[in-house]
Length: 480
Image (cartoon, rainbow, N blue to C red; front, side, top):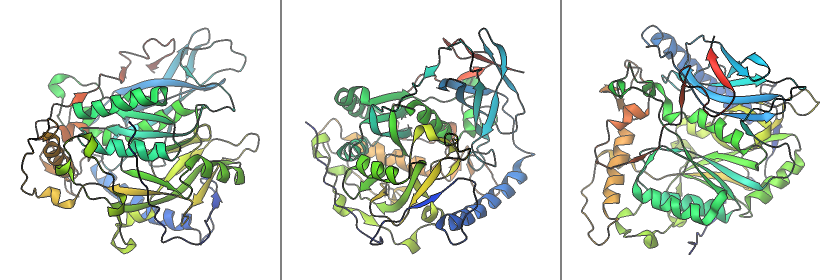
């Protein structure tokens, strides 16, 4: 039986009429626009990062491997793929296309700094292979048909869940999106508990092809090097390749889903009509060249009552208890950050909160546009922070012996404490200006988990080249 989720619409602080502002990425901006203010604030962060990166360049270890996953045929003339490499690598790639021979691989960074996050030096790259229009070759890569008919109007790309214990939030995630019109989900998996698996299995049975469960593993590493900061490439990957995931998912969704949101489990979408596809279709009609719709991301707090949950029937998503934080109490980067709904065929390079490059709009020779919908009650996200700061200082708890699911609440608390501590400390070093190390890497956090939870971990999904190159695909890469 499907659970019922009651949503009470948050109504302020918004203007009476919804704002819509159309901009083009990397184009001149009006001085008084909100985007100008946002870029000004983010430029301060970029300058700070640049200064810190320069200080650590000499001491940073090198990882020479190149790691790839799947390739996607995005048009008749182009194949694209995402890969990870050390940001200082200067390695050129070529692709061997049957009947065409060796073809150069163009590569791009997703932003101007060519750096994913802080001191996580294993960076995301985008490879592009151009095919002649007259070529009869049809490589066996994932091909998205060129079609104006979308099997799904609204889809969701969920960041890889890692060391995941709180299965209740998965139920809230699915029910809130399904209730407002989402029919396609790309759910990426790294590591999770058996209770989480049971919930995912239920939704897979319910949604069928509407839910794709996608393995997203660590990078391959020899057992003797695993967990070593100077030997394990995973020690330099931020949040299990979050940027790479976003683009992998967006390429999967091309011509399958018309509108796609990249979100976390704690992002609750809200539309004024409780019909997200309807709102997006109407805005899209008003702005036919739009590639994405950028909306407010409102920081909120949702209290947890895990001890009262004996089984799934006891889960209660009481949104009346959600409290929105006052703007003056919110950290500056959360104030300026937004969330987006994308048109997959129209976006190229982006991250969770910003757009760096869109596709060209037909024969206009200019990029598709971004629609800012700030201070707009028609569409926005509530960012429901589920953890409480006092988790860093554990409160006394007792076991509830009424249910076999009982220990999960203790395990969830302890695991969340450990992961929160991993934001501040890893590999025995405090993450501060003196010890400049990558935050929230899988190899950094895994050794800090103390609850003894037996996590289910996905099988290997990354290939290290040139040793193994696109298995089962007659297109492969070599190092030049």
